[in-house]
Image (cartoon, rainbow, N blue to C red):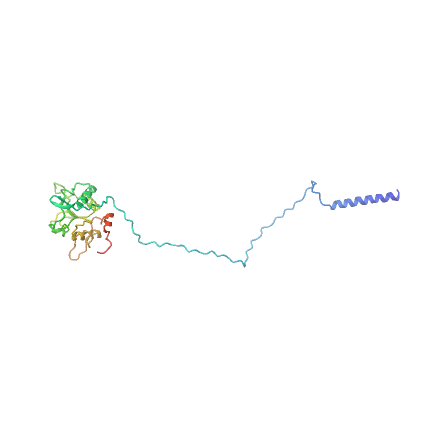
Length: 263
């Protein structure tokens, strides 16, 4: 082999060797299908850092005081008008019954009480035993001297039997119709006085002063008493029929429940 041929072969071998070395150092061609090893890095959760001192101002919430309304410890009760309340007419023409006189206002009130009561006692008939506008009834303290005062028998017609079962329903009917009404039992007013119901028409313009006292005086109906004046400074006697019944028309005239007030 000649010297020229040896030099060419040596040059060719060296060139091939250099190309192999350079191929090993070259980056991997992305177009090849050689697998690529992926390294997954897992980061541990960082602990929360709470600064002990900060230059930023801390916003403290402002407390808004709550409002508590003032409630009265004694609220005024709502007035509820009883059933069957009916304002009487302002008619003061005289009506004669059994030789006695009452005014048309009282007559209408008795008719209304009769319709509420519904029993056999005839308020505008046989059982009306004493009317108004008379000074002949000394035992009634002058209450019959003016208008609005009546006495009613509670004894059954044609007999001497007292209709005890009718007394309380009748008194409540009279009170709802606008009377201050009480039972006057045997001997209650004087020895031998008969049993009857005594009634005063509330708001009658012709009431005598003693009749007015039986409504609002110290022993009166609206104060929760039986209307009989007591002697020697004795205390008034309590009403035995449950106290006054008030209708709106009575309130409009200035009447009220006086049971908790001193006369």
